[in-house]
Length: 373
Image 1 (cartoon, helix red, strand yellow):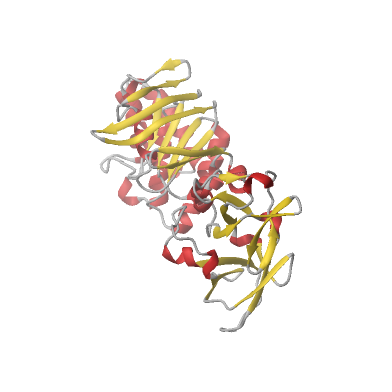
Image 2: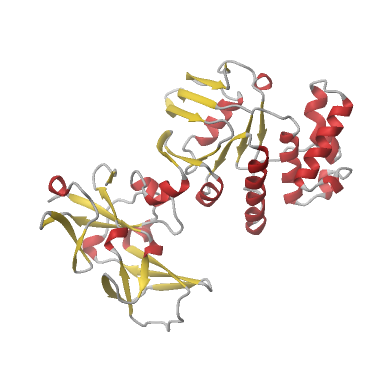
């Protein structure tokens, strides 16, 4: 096992730059997830780490070795792909041991490693089957087993769960997390699914247009997003954004929200007064019934999921943002979403009182999009 240091890596294809000065230190045994929308550069970075792509500039070190110019086979890493890439004519055991065989490993050692990995993954009863006789989840475990038997310094995983159905994806991500806790091998995992990132990572790296937006633990990323993009990307449903103006009031600063002068939870009030801002409020921080700040709405749509409801409310014109941030679609610009836990049944067309605690609000600069603490 080893730590990984990525220093100012860039990648360009002609005049198109897809990675911009990417720098990241990954500790020995850490599980780091690169997450972001399609085209943000996360898979390109993983391929550069693996040696499958050449960086335009910058360096990469694994452990004490500079591997920037080394071939993939000399980097001592193992990669798990979105496509499992299993040989259809080989048994599970031979698929798992194929890489070791090509490296000239002794047959007895190959058998020992394959049997050990198969027991860890719960597929020791499948060793004589071929891939066509396996389910999607079993094929995924075989692909993981092929990586484990290498006993590498690091695992690189490129969206390994994207081909699984929703229920199996939840089960398999729990298995991968448990496997990492057992093996403690440095792991870099790429996904576009923020739920996978939040549930699996020690640290998350959020990317947009080839640039790192924030590096933090899942809890910090959720509580203290660095900017509008991160705030809108992390969380399901994503954060609500309300356009407002900061107003000085009694040594603090307020914003007019739903007809109330709401005190904002920020320290540098004097510098903010009079500026255009964006106020963020997570759907799960909105409650049914009266509270610190209450407002009555006529829901446009209510989605019931049994133990929770998503309530969609049309925003007043004054709070609608002209430009979407954080990947919001058109409907999210004009709607507020409340996520109500264990809600009471509500007949269609009934008005509803909602409330929130001002201490839960997030404040962002309307121009730069950066968070204001």
